[in-house]
Length: 77
Image 1 (cartoon, rainbow, N blue to C red):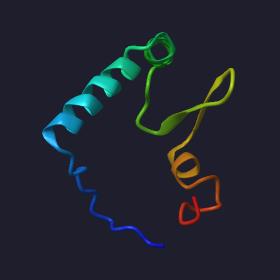
Image 2 (spheres, rainbow, N blue to C red):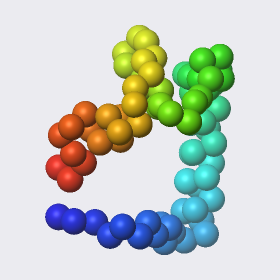
Image 3 (cartoon, one colour):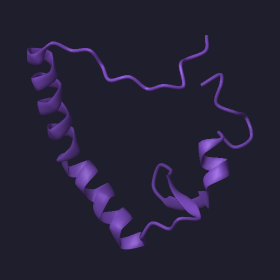
């Protein structure tokens, strides 16, 4: 199944949108996410590579490999 290249916002009711915003903020401020954000800031982002998070380490990989599913493409993800 192909998806549209145009990304549309979710059509949520105001109540559902507020609940989602609350959940998203709670997740973004969780201890695990704060640790990952701090780690990324220590490492530093560069324009020629992406930071790939594995189980216990962070590896710098090319943008082409990281976003192209390491040669397997993204159509079947």
